Length: 145
Image (tube, rainbow, N blue to C red):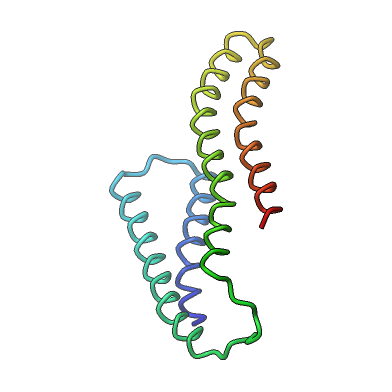
């Protein structure tokens, strides 16, 4: 199992090492070299991840359960917990959709008029408030379960 984890850590270390090397000694590299290196890293990481998944499942299935007296969650409780998480997730998606155009417009305005920084923060805070409202709703719903 440790060799699989090492196989996953190798591409990450190689990418970091190549990044530091290219940062210290910048040069123009051919596109084929970069594509080949990226492909090798992705394939090696993917193989390591698949191996950890396949061999890790066998280890987990072979292990004895740690706690046998844990309370089971009924279908209704499970659906209620999913319903509690829904407002936060959907509100976060809505806030992300709102923050995209607001953030890009804010950067454009700040580049032209730096004194508008405070106003742009207010607009971004209003858009982020959508996610906070979803979190508050989830907390209130969690109190009802």
